[in-house]
Length: 286
Image (tube, rainbow, N blue to C red; front, side, top):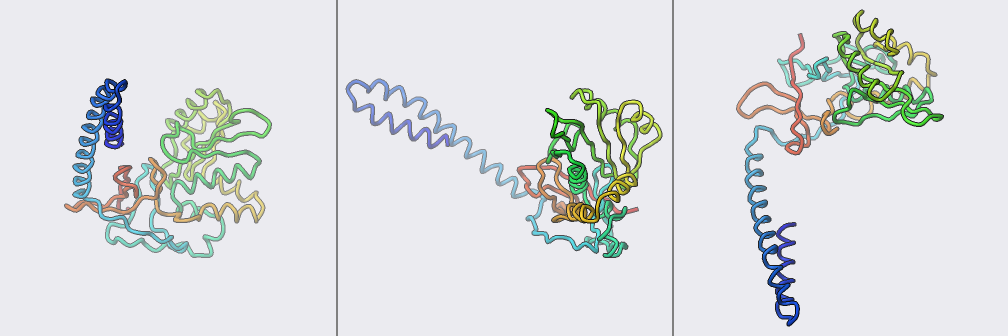
């Protein structure tokens, strides 16, 4: 763009220089024209230097992924946003849950899906209750994953925080941070949903500050109260697309498995590298 702009200015200077009245203006345009050309050359040089360095990076070419069959669970997400996989084989481990079990709601569904699918299920669940649900698609969410709007009020009616934690309970620290977000938006109602459980301190704090807690069992109970058609609709949301492979929290792209060329542990890297350099660790199941 800079080179094009500079060339345009030079052409203008050439045209104006032959004019008896505008010749001075043509000569004046020459200085910014050469400056723009210099900037363009400099930027092109930087571009090719960075392009060469990116070509030497350890990341391998991005593979194409097919959707994972529902009868397998290649990855599960831990509370620290790391994805756990068996270190003895690059192939996903077979899921011990039968295919028929994954056609109905159970804890196995939460274990089979990644964090973004869990957020989508929560969004759809509240939408079935009559709210207009708006999900924070990716990037920093300020402690909020779903904004719930009432049809009869301006602004969000309440907010929902979603935590896809298969094992470790959500503590009072996380619930207290969510309460701070509610206070900053002057909201007195909020829901904290997790696939795991809550500690006693977190439960006590939530009761005293108007926060509704939904653990994994509570979510399944709430889903069971929906009609069979609504339950199947929620299940379709959970298993939509590549439901097991993690989503990049930075840009919303699916992540791909990468291995450093000089050795080391494999990790999940964003598919849009080098534009987005987000990564998640892979660890062996214990």
